[in-house]
Every structure is written in C-alpha cells, then in structure tokens.
Amino acid sequence: MELDFLSWAFAVALLQIVFIDLVLAGDNAIVIGMASRNLPKAQQKQAIIWGTIGAVVIRAIATLLVVHLLKIPWLLLIGGFLLLFIAYKLLVQEESHDTIKAGNSLWQSIRTIIIADAAMGLDNVIAVAGAAHGNDLLVIIGLLISIPIVVWGSTLFIKLIQKFPWIIYIGTGVLAYTAAKMITHEPEIKHYFENSTLFSWSFISILILLVILAGIVTNMIKRSRSSERNKKAIISSRDSI
Image (tube, rainbow, N blue to C red):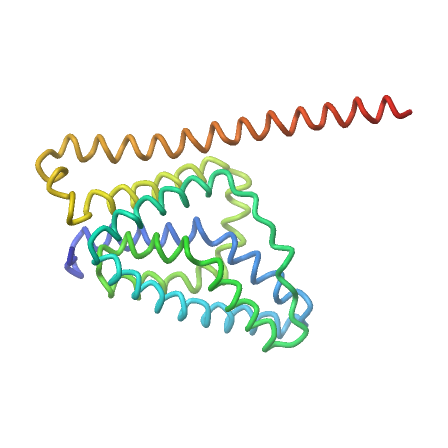
C-alpha cells in the first residue's frame, strides 16, 4: 500500500513508527548504558552517538529488506502473528542483559552497541516494517527520527514508564494494532476483510484485547507464583532457626 508523502495516512503511519521506536527503546538504552559504562565521560558520549548511528543504519537496511520480503505471499500473515507475540512479550518480558560486556575502548563499546542492538532488534524491525505499509521513505524517515529518540529519549522514556506503567499497555495496543493490520492486509486473505468493514475492525479489536488480556493474566500468575515462593522462603527460614 503506497502512501502519499503529504497525506494524513503517511503522517499517522510515521507517528506510529516513532511511538513504536519509543516503546521498544528500553533495551537499546540498557545496551548503550552497559556497553559504554567503563569509558570516560567524553568518550561515553561518542560511543553512544556513533554506536546508535551504526545500529540504526544496520536496522534500516534490515527493515527495508523485511518490507520487501513481506510482499511474498503469506509472509505478511506470518509477520503479523509474530508481531502479536512480540506485543505480548512487551507486557511480560523479564530479559537479562548481564551478557553485555562493557567495552574498555571507544571502538569496543561502539562495536558492542551495534552487535547487541542488531541481535535484539528483530521486534523493532518487524514492527516498523509492518507500520510502514511497504513504503521505503516511511522506514527511512522513521528510523532517522529514532536516532535522537534512542540517544536522548529512551532513558527518559523508561523513567516515564516506571512512573506511569499504563503507557506500556498503550504500546502493546499499538503493536497489536500494527500486527492485526498486517494480517488483514495479507493479499491471500484480505478480500475477507475488504468485504466487511465491521468484520475487519471487530477482528482487529479482538486481537488487541486478547493480547493485552493475555499479558495481564500472565503477569497476575507470575506475581502469584512469586508471592508463593516468597512465603515458602520465609517459612523455610523460620523453620531453620
């Protein structure tokens, strides 16, 4: 689906990409911080800037490739379901970044940032490719905007999410919406959705609700299990005294 550069659809898709970059920027901020923490302050800034630029260039190339791969029959559908899982994981993830080693030189830190970001950037690549609707210009502009977002805004956004946890649910909803639109635009099945606007929007809404509810239920179960483990640990420590 080609979008006119001056159209509202282009502007909305661009805002969607920027928001996706913000929501998924947490890991980038952690990677950048851990990779450059051993450097002097002056070099830390250089590592952050050049590491982020290198990571974004690689991500832009990967995203452009995925944009065109999604034109292959059924891959848009597969990518949509994969992005639904990524949206769900955004609510429940507990990823460890202990394997990311701090660099002892500027080049080592830049290399670590680029490699780690490339390894962890699949979620962002798929999400941006889906939101771009096959438009290469959207991908490039969106990822160019993401450079200052990742460098200066990601850490601030993490603090904002910690203060207002509901933002994560909005982010999950945006990712789920993007995923649902990818599924409904799959050329092999999109005629089912084009024939009924009500069916199309009902399908999209149900997918968004299912992903958010699945995340909420999973988090409730995890908290319950954690609470049970803590109780058992307290009882065990009392018995051992």
